[in-house]
Length: 291
Image (cartoon, rainbow, N blue to C red):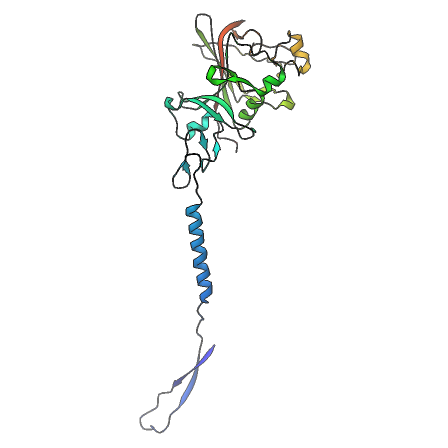
């Protein structure tokens, strides 16, 4: 509050008298200059941070809120490897020209995994197992846990541990595709296929099994649950030894309906096990990543 003096109006007939009165007026103080400067400086700093925050890595190019990544990478700034081949597809690489070999790194995987990716079915397909009939996949627990072979040679398995890491990051459709006889094809589909951890003996689970009339196949996994993995070096429930020392997923009664890791590559077709020319695992993610 401050006081101001104003002269009072005086009639002309009394000019010799001059009066003054005091009026009190409230004048709102202006904000301090230093606060205004600080606010403007803060706003400028924020704007500058926003414009410099996006730093594209691994060959990415900047867009408005994220980077456009090369097929191998993903993330806001292309800072990590893709989680699976489906993520390559989700990032815009949707045609056969992007088919090839990729390093993926699932969310919980400690290191990258080399796989083959294909984008021909309006989805990214991750190939995790490919076995020709003349290849020996009957190996011990450690080898099957860690994986072996090379996707570029069409003779490999990414390993039980890596299968677990891939499958736990979303819901996947497993398509087991094989050929037999006079180049006859078969397809077995498993919805929401999962492989548990080593502590649970890589137990297999799925919601449903399907096939198609033009490529018939039977369910190759035992219906006698739990279906656990057994191999020399970790002979779960003695199932490997009771089946001639052959590795594989066995039911609770040690039954199995396939030869995925046996000496002879087989899969059930009709009422019997059919010897195969080749068999592959194709994984297609059906949900967003569980990040």
